[in-house]
Length: 323
Image 1 (cartoon, rainbow, N blue to C red):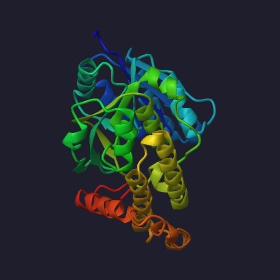
Image 2: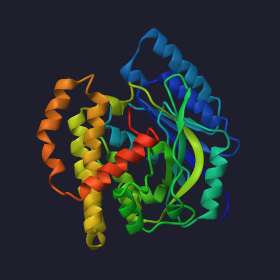
Image 3: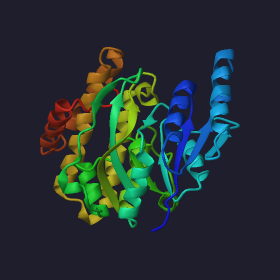
């Protein structure tokens, strides 16, 4: 196939200085691309320092012909904001970047090579390095297992692998997809707040072929001002429970008892992860969350195997969210 135009889009909510860093990492790529920046900066903060940073970012963006820069006239729900950002893209393939994340050198050229090697694949996942608020390397993401790499995955394989936490397309910056596939599944849905991106991933998995690559292309920034770290733990748990049920429904008759046990174990693990993350900062909320969800551990005894497997694997690789 011919040249592949990939659109990198940044739905920027805050963090102007980090958005500047992210945009620079995209514009330093050594191949043709499109950068779309959709921002809420002026809607959130009109202090002199913030305006100075916005103007510096605007100067960077407007100086490059590859950039499309749009400001929202009103605040949108995050799902609508992401959908608007994708709709502005001209490329055949789209990658969403968090405004506080970065692209590594040569990443877009590698993405183009992935598409040319597997032109029928609609959804691609890859790896990232995790960095802290200052940009220091925390760890590298664990490589995907050989069973699920170097070949396209069917919808059933991908969804079963997701329930069993073997096929993890990780954060949005670790994925890219055909824009027409985004259109086909209806984009990001407002049904979920905490896991709407994972719900979108599962819709793509169900409707088209997907593929995992053991290539590290981006840096993900972990910091306590991130959106996910601020959302209530009860919402995070409720959203995940709804998501796993949605995935089992998408599997239909292919959903096995083992899949349902893995789904329950995933929710149990998430409850324990939330307890560990927030017990010191929000002890009363966490106590209420635990007491009201103890029944999760009794519903499906087979789920304990999957919960313990997740605990062991994530602990070994320090692979927790908003740690």
